[in-house]
Amino acid sequence: MKVWGKIFGFLFGFMLSKNIFGALLGMWLGHSFDKGRSLNFNNLAGGRGSEQERQTIFFYSTFSVMGYIAKANGQVSSHEIAFATAYMDKLGLKGELRQQAQDAFRDGKSADFDLEDKLQTFTKFCGTRQDLLLLFLEIQIQVAFADGELDQDERRALHHVAKSLGYSAHELDKLLEMIIAGAQFHQGQGSRSGVSSQQQLDNAYKLLGVSKEVSGKDIKKAYRKLMSQHHPDKLVAKGLPAEMMEEAKQKTQDIQAAYELISERDK
Image 1 (tube, rainbow, N blue to C red):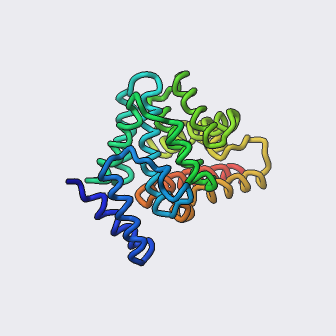
Image 2 (cartoon, rainbow, N blue to C red):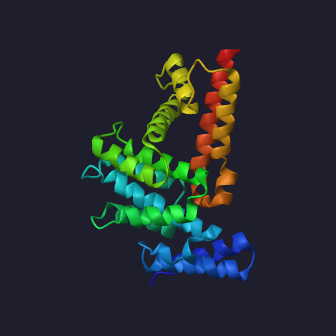
Image 3 (cartoon, one colour):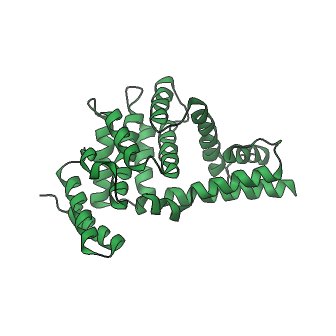
């Protein structure tokens, strides 16, 4: 009998709400995970979710859609499996939580995975929180680009997900450029990365979503907007599971480093 989901949910709910009602809600959500990872989230509060519900749905949706994206071209590559594993490691997922993430990833890879239903439920609970939607989409882009390439099937799947979240094709393409540049910028921060200073500067501009011709005022505006969108505390308050805060922290560190590099160049 699986009980760790209920135990974790009870403790997590009590820590967040400081009362027995929040703890019982957390235990109920944990019980849902124990019963089966492919939850019928549509039954939760008619879509008007509490913070705990949003965190549960964000967690499951992230890893299940990650599995779907990984399988978009017909097979899951070793790079995509490595990315999912490394991502779980980065979040520090162990024991039951790691099992839940793995089960959700496996759900997404299955032939009967209902992407439309899962995205509809996800947007029902998180759709008004644009920062969460942005982080969710950024994670899916990362897994699609895990092998350094983005084939037609993966791009088509990403456009499908983005459209369901309210992003246009143009917005997704712009985000793709920013995410890819951000990954290259992050890798290039090591002194032995082999990335030239000019390449790093180019990636810094793309990471912030600005061109080299814009004014310092516009660069600062773009920087502040991105920092606000990815601020870890704000995201957790809006429904990001605490275990996934590391993703937001790394993103803000890269944004900060990119802005400082550009500012130093301007001086």
